[in-house]
Length: 116
Image (cartoon, rainbow, N blue to C red):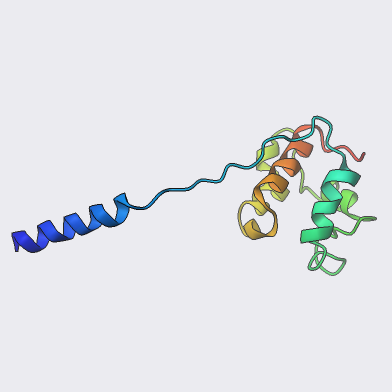
C-alpha cells in the first residue's frame, strides 16, 4: 500500500511538474483617447451584432449601440469594472471578445464612455 501511494505521488509530481503554465498577457498598449466610433463600434460589429443586431437587447448596430448602452444601464463610469457590459464580456460572453478588446472597452468606460 505504501508503494502504491508513493507511486501515485510520484506520478502526480511528474505530470504536473513537466507542464508549463503559459499565461498570455494582453497587449496593454491601449489608446489614451479611445474613440467610440473607431475603437469600440468595430468590436461590436465583428463580435456582437450577429446576435445583438436589433432583435436582442442591447442593439449594438452602429446607429443604435451608444444610446442602447448608455441609456439602459450597461455602462457605469463611476465603477467601470462593474459595468454590466464589461462584466458580461468577462462572464457569460467571455468568448465573444479577446483580452485586448475587453481592455479597450474597459478603457473607454474609464475615460467617460464618450460618444466620439
